[in-house]
Image 1 (cartoon, rainbow, N blue to C red):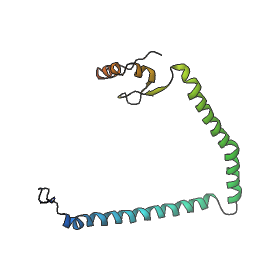
Image 2: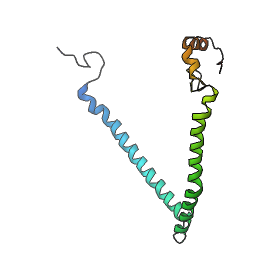
Image 3: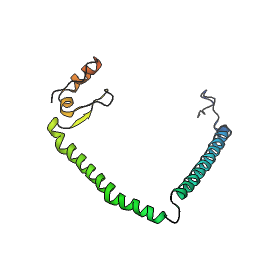
Length: 137
């Protein structure tokens, strides 16, 4: 003999699930339609503002100027920044204690991975005792 959810005392009839979920589905459809209308009006307002900022007679000159600045100044600066950050993390961070990790239970504090791996039991004992995070480099 198989038992249904209603027999198990949960009070939910699978045959009536369609009647239960129908209003929820209608609400989801109405909210999705309202969200689509909002995004349509937002895009229309942004297009109108872009038309005011870039009039058709000077649009190609202005966008071409922004493109030249972006390719000659912003892109090289971004590449140099990424290279410098990569070099600093790979080369300079090793000289100051090696790899680091997020200290468990310390809300984003960083600590050397080697210190934790050497004595994880002591770390968690100090964490439960509310001792400050101290490590030797």
